[in-house]
Amino acid sequence: MLRRIVQACFLIIGVTLGIFLIPDLLKLMNLNDIPLLNNPYVSAVLGAIIFYLITFWAVDHVVNFVRWAEESLVKVPITDIIFGSVGLVFGLVIAFLIGYALNAIEVPILNTVAPIVLTLLFGYLGFQVGFKKRDELLTLFSNKKKKTAEEDSEPETAAKNSLKILDTSVIIDGRIADICQTGFLEGTIVIPQFVLEELQHIADSSDVLKRNRGRRGLDILNKIQKELSIKVEIYEGDFEEIQEVDSKLVKLAKITNGVVVTNDFNLNKVCELQKVAVLNINDLANAVKPVVLPGEEMKVQVIKDGKEQNQGIAYLDDGTMIVVEEGRNYIGKHIDVLVTSVLQTSAGRMIFAKPKLLEKAL
Image (cartoon, rainbow, N blue to C red; front, side, top):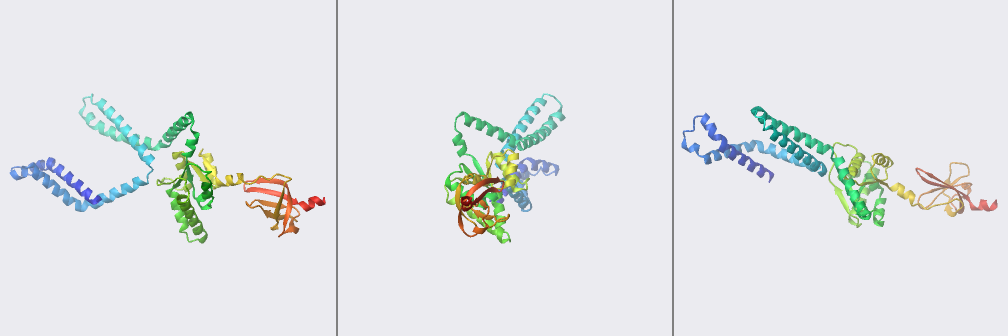
């Protein structure tokens, strides 16, 4: 289809140039005395034939160029295209106004050259300004939208419409599906295309562990999209000038005013530095762990030795480690313990306890 369209364009150009240029060409060749050649219809047919013959050589190059341009434009985010086009239009309008003002100066060379130079210069500057300032303009518009929402007292609606952008680690982790199923995560789930590509690359890895993790991530996405009622969107755009997937996520969150959902500690810190909203699944997991206070009693099973002498190690159902003092002799047994202290670390929560039998003995 595209090939036919290009050939039709060549024919139209040939007919137009034939009508206007072939008569002058015949005059130069002293062939204007032939009545048949002076007919405009004949000129149009001659131009069409000439350009039709040119298509046999040029059509493939034009088609390849059009397809390359189409693929390049499809990969560019729609916001880049919109703001670049708006900037280009403003630049052309300014160039036209300045060129119109210069027409009052009766200098033939200035009136001929200046409009061309101004059009190229201001068109380029307008496009570049619109393209490079798109983030600031989007932030300006989003801030206005946020203020309007606050003035209208609709914070709940704004929260429901917010975008939650998933990164690769949180998809592979799998807990995001359970969180979505419980309804604690509102808004629209956004899965960027470059994250899908990274997941597919991991799923195709020669390493068995990586391959299983990648396939697990794809299964989690299918579950979220097909089995859960939450709205899911695929972001088709990409940022080719950025190599790192984490940096692309931060960029996307800035453009869309969305929230990055992750369990990657480093990405969490980058988002905080870049003033991007972030939800960390590990922080959520630590927050919902049961609160244990010193003096409480619980029943645990001592599993193994601790690092220090006579220590035993036990675990709660959520994976919290319990260090049982003088618990080495109870390995493999269920015993009642009393909590002595609780230590919160970056890796999680650690509970120190001692057997209740020892407390009674004292």
